[in-house]
Amino acid sequence: MLSPVLTLSIFQKQPDPQAFSAGQIIFEEGQAGDCMFGILDGELTLSAL
Image 1 (cartoon, one colour):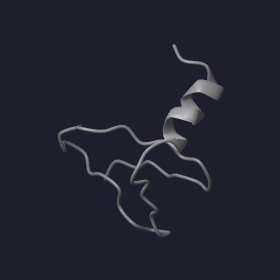
Image 2 (cartoon, helix red, strand yellow; image 1 turned 60 degrees about the vertical axis):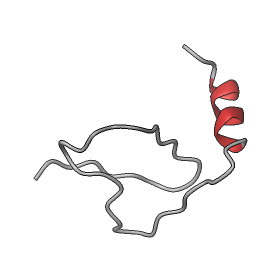
Image 3 (tube, helix red, strand yellow; image 1 turned 45 degrees about the vertical axis):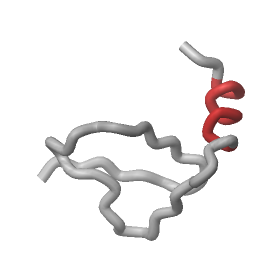
């Protein structure tokens, strides 16, 4: 497992970081996973409908 400091440095070096608005859906259940998300600032709510 990577240390938190190393993990943050990897995310900070990404060439195209994404920003999401409040209430925006980032992914949906059953969707194929082809990337990893890291929350650098803010909050995330996970829910299954």
